[in-house]
Each structure stands twice: as C-alpha cells, then as structure tokens.
Image 1: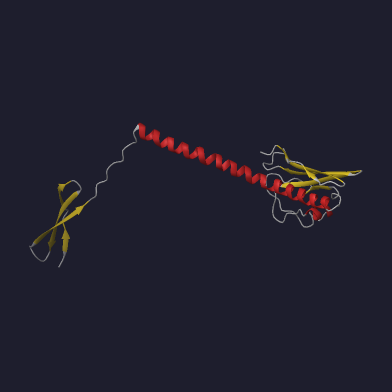
Image 2 (image 1 turned 180 degrees about the vertical axis):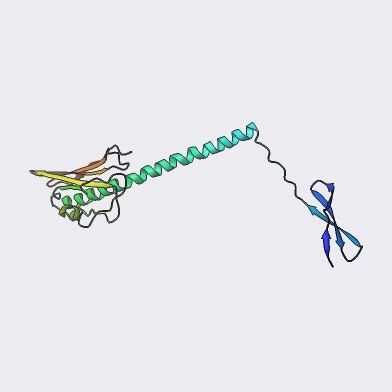
Length: 204
C-alpha cells in the first residue's frame, strides 16, 4: 500500500485564520480521502511611531535622568581621588600632634616616598619603602597599590618647631602633579596647632 499527498488547496475564512485541504490517495484503492487542516495565525499589529509630544516627553525624561546621574558620578569619582591624600595627610597630622602634645619634637624630615610619583595608575611598593623611622613613627605605610607619594619636612628653631607634609599624585599620567599639603606648629609649653589642608590642582 502506498500513500501520496496532493498539494493543498487553501481557503481563507477570516483574517488570521487559514484552512487548507489535503487530498490523500491510497494506491491500493480508488478511495480518496480529503482532510481539512485549519491553522490559526496570530496577527501582529505594526508598531506606530511616536507623536511629537510623546517624543518630547521621552527626551525630557532621559535628560532629567542624565542631569541627576552624571553629576553624581562625577562627584563620586572626584571624591574617590581625594580619599588617599586627605586620609594620609590627616594620619600624619594626628600622629605629629600627638608627639608634640607628649612633649616630643616633631619627627625628622623624610624624603618623597616613593621617590617616583605613581603616574596614571596605582603602584604597589616593593618591600622596605616605608621603613624610614619617620614614616614608622607617623604610622604611614601602604600595603596595597596607591596613587600618591608623601613627603615630610620638619624643622626646629629655639622653642618653636613646625612641619609640612605633602602628598603628590599624577592620576592621569600627564606629568602635571596634583598636590595636597598640611602643616603644623608647636611652641614649647603650648598645645600644637594644625592648619587647614591646602590643595593645588586637586582635579586632573
């Protein structure tokens, strides 16, 4: 027995609904059977374009989101760049003030550390970089990659001593350094003074 199928004859009843007739022939019989198969297709409405008013509304909403988000991102980025030098200098100032309050002199000067200011990317210091006695007494060291070099200069004249601590960085690697500094002063018999931090080219 064999079966072969004739091409279907389509009949459209309504939009989205199509019926087709399939004629099936049996070779061992003269009988011809006709089956009707109906298939339903979902119609998709075409997308319409936005009206000028709707388009203006979308632009206004997007503009509002950008107006709020971009300044916040810039502020966060700016703040993250300030954390290291400000925190480092505050640690130095606090340690120096404690030493002066206890009747000790400010620590001796310490050179720019690391000697080469990190440029364009944070740098991990090799072992021993922060073993200078002054950095040890001030409690300043970095175990992770960092972006600034620090320097401490102190002097004593008679009953008066003072220091200047500086942080220098080159975050964008253009050779132009941003600089942060803080200074303090102590006179025998008086409480030490720490002056406000100063910044030069803090945004690169």
